[in-house]
Every structure is written in C-alpha cells, then in structure tokens.
Length: 260
Image 1: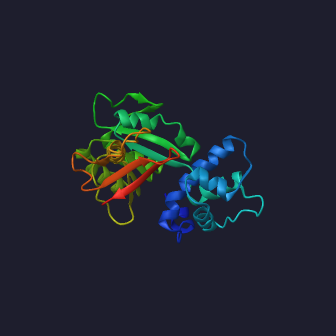
Image 2 (image 1 turned 180 degrees about the horizontal axis):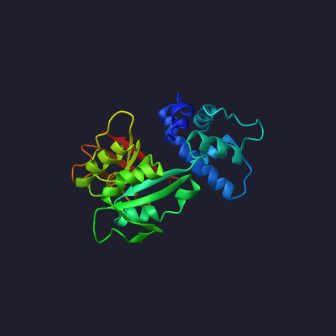
Image 3 (image 1 turned 60 degrees about the vertical axis):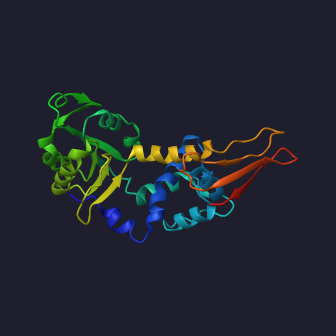
C-alpha cells in the first residue's frame, strides 16, 4: 500500500530548507484563518512565520504560488497548496511505540487529526500497560507491530520508548514497511536508504536555552550614575570574551565588544 505520491513527485526539486519552512508557514496560515483573515501580504505572513519576505516569496514560488499584486495571498488557497505539497490532503495513520508519559501525551494531542494525521495504534511491551485504553486506543503488545503496520497501512512510526529499545523497535518498523520515523529516544538511529528519521530531543533544546541564558546572565545593565565595569565569565565558559556596558548621556545602553 503506497502513500508516497507527493513525496516522490510533488516535493522533488524543492530545497530541503524550503520544505523545513513549509510547516511553519502552514501554522501561521492556520492562525490567520482562525481569525477569519481572507488574504495576507508576503510581509505580514513572513513576520508571522519569523522569516524575511523575500525568502517567503521564493519558497512559495516553488509551489507555483505568487500571490496577487496589491492583494497578497488567499489564505485558504495557500493552506491548500502548502498542505498538498506536504502530503496533508490525505490521511496518514501513525503508530506510537512506547505508551509511557510521552507516548500518552502524543496520543492525546488533538492537533494530529486537524493536520492530516491519525493515531492508528499504541504499542508497548509492559504487561501492566498492555490492554489499557489511552485516548480511545487499546494498547497493543510489542509482538503486534508488524500486524498493525500491515493492517492500517502505516508509513509513519513514532518511537517514544527508552533509548535501549529504540534501535530494535526502529528495525522492526522498517522491516514491516514503515518509511518515516519520528524518534523521541535520546539515541541516533541507524536506518537504510529510503527511510527518513526526524529526531526530537527536548533535553538538547533545553541545553541550548541554558547556554543562551548563561550568556545573558553575565551581562549586567548598569543603573544611571554607576561606573561601567568589564564583565567576564567567571567559570571560563565564555573564554576570554569581555563586554563593556555603559549608559550614554541619553540614558541608552551602549555595548562595546572587547576581544572574542
């Protein structure tokens, strides 16, 4: 059972960076539609998506959408165009392997159905969890993976199991015919050619945020009348970088980089 028509043809030739931005545009477009906005300029849509308007226009030109001068883009039609290119105008059954806290949260997420995805089944290996009902689905045993993939025509699998089990689960999903994996386990999966893996690691995102928070914490904005000190990282994590801050006569903060 093949569901790869759009990915094999429609998205061919579109840059990967553009493909990565299409879901962001779609999210912004849905927000506009929810506010009953019928048309949007490239500048407004770009601002909502967090990109510049020139990049947005170039991205949308790959879809054959150029908007109307003086009017902009028709929101509903652009939603259709982007959804079509992403393959979201059809139903995509998804199997979730791992019915722990994260798996339960995914199964209960209401945004899947409105975006063209449907949870086909939840699978777990814990006898205490197997047979329980989560989000209207009876949790199935791990030995049912192949049957679920075949019966529901599943091509997308979400792995929310512990890292030690992730590769084995991935191998079984791929062998059963799954060609796209959403991996939440903190491990790099090995897959054959023709299989796509998207990794979601919340701890990595938090570590990146912690880095930026640390950098901001070493910069102190001075109050009027105070001398301007040189601020450097006390723990050495910023190397020899120093930044001098002062208040100019108009009360504005000015910064001068000293070394890198």
